[in-house]
Length: 156
Image 1 (cartoon, one colour):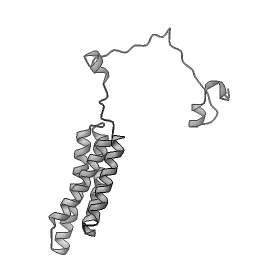
Image 2 (tube, rainbow, N blue to C red; image 1 turned 90 degrees about the horizontal axis):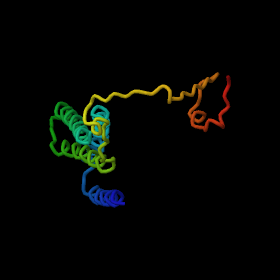
Image 3 (cartoon, helix red, strand yellow; image 1 turned 60 degrees about the vertical axis):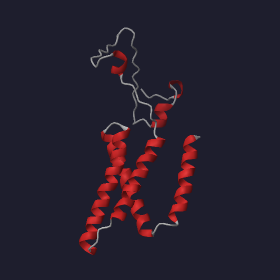
Image 4 (cartoon, rainbow, N blue to C red; image 1 turned 135 degrees about the vertical axis):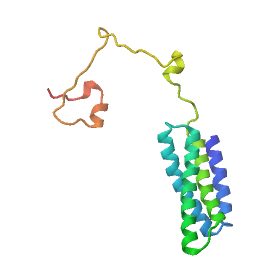
């Protein structure tokens, strides 16, 4: 419920602010959110879901595209706009905060956290293990694999 309340407050603030912002800044903000989302996704994959790197990736992605766009504007139109760059980075910051709010912040415990070391030896007792081998004449579908064993039609 907290997340929905925060989202509604942010949306209402964004609706009021949009009327006062010129179109160019709004486009920079949208561009920053899109590239911030891409940067956050890449950083999340590389860092195995570390929330700080995901946030840094969102800001970094928006900063990268903002500097590139302003460099192009400076060379083609003869003007660098810090306000446009700020609007782009604010878009990435917004994405970073949104991802941080809506992702699960609970830390996943590693096996080494429970055992006290990283040298964990895992062995299988072959007497107690049972292996079910299925043979299909065709590639099984996900639906077929998800059915209970008693309902499946198995071809020898």
